[in-house]
Structure formats: C-alpha cells, structure tokens
Image (tube, rainbow, N blue to C red; front, top):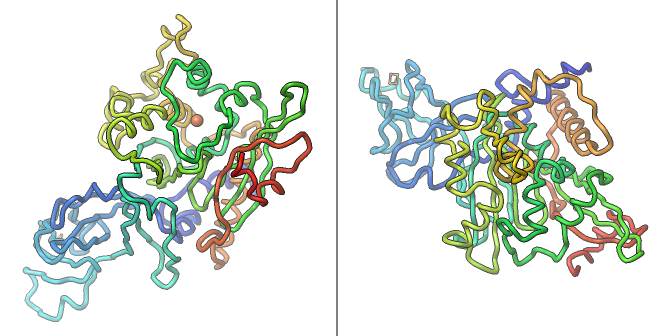
Length: 437
Ligand code: FES
Ligand SMILES: [Fe+2]
C-alpha cells in the first residue's frame, strides 16, 4: 500500500470507508450527561464518524439516539419536541420513540402505516457522567466498556470536552508522542521546575517521580512498544546518571482501541470522538477517590494546569460553543501566538499551556489526509506502531474479522517509575513493584 492509500485508510472515517466500519464496532463517547439535563428537555445534535444524529431524553428520562434527518422528508429532529413519549418532528408531526418506532403520523390515514416505517436508532448508554453510543450492527454490539472512573462518586471526578479541528489521529498521535513535551510544553516544564506556574494536581496516586526534571534533561528518550489485547503499551525510557549511578526512567502509557490514552498519573483518561475527517472531540477525565475534585479550587487547579480553565476555554475557542468563532485561534491569526511575549523572553511558544499548544500544532499540520511523506525518527516509533495497528485493524474488519480491543482482558494501567541501569521495563512492570516507588 502506498503512502496516499495508507493515509486514506487511517484518516477517512465517513460512511463508505473501512475505518468508518471499524470505528463503528466500538462504544464511542458522545457528550456529557449534563448536555441533556432534563427529561423532555431540548434534544442535542451529535456528529460522529461523519454522520449527524439527534440525542434526546423522552419525558420519562430515557435516552434516544436516532438519525437526525426525519425518515419522512428529512427535516432535522434536533428541532423536534420531546414533551411526549418520544421525539416529534416539527414538520409534519411524526413522532418516534427512543427505539425509532413510529408512534404517530398525523398526516397518514392508514393506521397500519406506523408499523412499516422506522427511524434508524442506535444503542445508547450513560456512565461516568458521559453519554455513549454504539453505531454498529445490533448483533455485533460489544460489551459496554468498564472504565475505572465509572464507579467513582461524581464529586470525585472531572469530565471535560475540548473541541479540535483536526483528524482524530492527530490527537492520538500527539498524546502518544511523549517526546514533544520538552519542546512544545517547555514553558509548563520551566514553570514546574521553578515553581512559578500552575502546579500539577496532586492526585493521591501521583508518585514522587520528577517527570519534569527527566523530560527537561532528555529530549530523545528511547521508545519501546508492545502489543496488547486492548491496543498498545509503550514506554518512553530516559537514561541518565545521577550521583554517578546509571538510572532509567520509564513512562508507561497505554493506547486503548479505538481512540483512548491512559497516561500517568494513574487517574487521567483521554478519549477521542472522531467527529468527521477534520474534526474531533477530546474527552479528558480525572478521578481521585481520596478527595473531592468536581468543583471549586480543586477543579480549577486541574483545569488550569492543562490550559483548559474557563478563561482559556473561552479565549482559545476550546469549548464546543466557542470553537468556530473567527477571533479564536486559527491559521489566519497564527493560532493567537504572542510573538512579543516570546521576544521579551516571557514565553518559549507564545501560547497558553498544554492543550492550546497541542491544538495549534495539530491544526497547523493541515488536513491529515493531505499530509506529505514524513521523516519519522526513532522517537516516532509509538506513532508508527499506532498507525500500523490501526491499519491492520481496519483491514481485519474489512475481511470480516472482529477488531481488536472490543473485549480486552489486560489492564491499561499507566505507570512512571525508575529502573536500575540494565533492568527491563516490561519485566519490572509485570511485577507490579512500581506501585511502591
Ligand atoms: S419531515 Fe418529519 S414529519 Fe415530515
Ligand atoms: Fe502535548
């Protein structure tokens, strides 16, 4: 397969493409429970894998996920009424229940007509303050994922959605490419080592590993990758000497099919919803059973650290509502980069911390499907292995096989630990000893 065919297979997710059929085989995160606060309240539009859907709660509070276009003559059900048993299209008043059954068709005389027509409907669930959808065939529905934050009390959890105008692979590749941190996030690392900026959230499980110090020392860690039943587990290994002793630091990260990353500290998960070929929603989830983080200072500290506090969400167009406003970061305004702050030596990137920096890079790369041949180096090994696994997975689905990771048994637990000079990270990881560091 040549470069163009590979790019197409990996990035094109609208109907008719093999990756669309592949991503459809998983439960996907769609939005927040709070997007649909009330039974019988306003429906919301969901765009996923290049198609539009309506999501609503009927008057009993039951969720329905249907095609947006009414099966009669395609008016949008997002304009419909939900004060009855289902959702009623405004145009001619056809009403559908949460399973897409036609309950009422006021402009049709034949009483049997209602049994002949159905609005396409999909499986929908609610867990961890998020709403999830499954768009594949009913007889291929995979087990609902068991994410570790599902069982946590709401006050111990933060869930945020960040909009991005780039292909889902750009976000995943940015997350598994740990070697960009020392350059693109240099300001945050400097603040961290100097104690001059937002401090990282103090999760109960955060180990006393000086990641900022290690990352600042080593911009070219060795990347090692292993395949697992959920996707990939990989380590960025930095080697250095401390007090004359050879040491290694291994940052173990998990890529969970089809679009999830678990990064140390242990309790942050990042999931991507591929919206269409050039847009994505990024879900960040933190949880901490040892303290309440859902509101107030604790919440603000977490969001500030990652550059997604409420001021940043608005200023940098990171929220779904503000993302498309013309004065927010885009190519025409150079993603609001502040060259003067750079000249004054106040900022290395001229951008706000972490997510706004990542987004500027993702969007500056242009359309993923058009990207030219790259010059990958050993530091890009995880990116290359990710692409290879995604492509192999889509080819397997096209052959009629199940995709990987629909019912994994291995645990995608991430970790960050030190090893002595010649220890192997895989062996040490499997012992579980790292938890004591
Ligand atoms: S288009 Fe929806 S009822 Fe006619
Ligand atoms: Fe980044």
